[in-house]
Length: 264
Image (tube, rainbow, N blue to C red; front, side, top):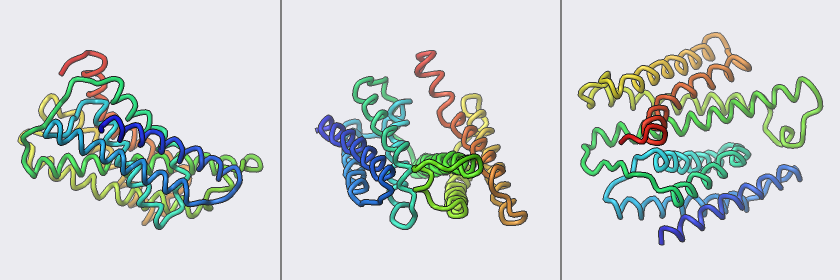
């Protein structure tokens, strides 16, 4: 059943991507790609739930964690599409989710299970993953915003850029994503300081420092937006810098230890 759920999810992720690309070229907006995406996410959730029941825990190895993050990013994107015109981000997000799921199926790595952990640790882990996922979407939004701004300034924009909302709307969406992501990142950091005995231990210090620096960047950006009206390249640049810091904090050490040095 796990393989069936995964195969269905991969196929519908890719089918949704292709239909979004088609609609972009035709400058149309249909609901079918979103229906397929919901099917993909539902199958992905079923696959994840089955794996959880099999192991009695989530597997937090590098590939499994990346797959879980891709699921949450896809789910949050679909929830956002209910009120915001952000489905074009699926062109990037859905194929990544499909690839990560395929890698987990075909390259099983050593499980890193958390069978026993308190609700406090569960809150910390969950809010960390949600924060990273939301800020992941914000980073993709910033990349699209940068491309849109460059295209509109230099030459007649391509059809994909023309299909996007206006620059002003894209910026509003960006800061909404940043605000929501910062909220969860704040809860993650606070819960970490309260519930983790030594957040600056040797194996955690880089994650803690990088996450705090990212928090400062995102907070300063939102404050600058409200007080000084920061926008455009300033918003894009600092959004991407903050996200890269979080990426290094969340996945940098896992990549080095698990895939390069082959340590547990």
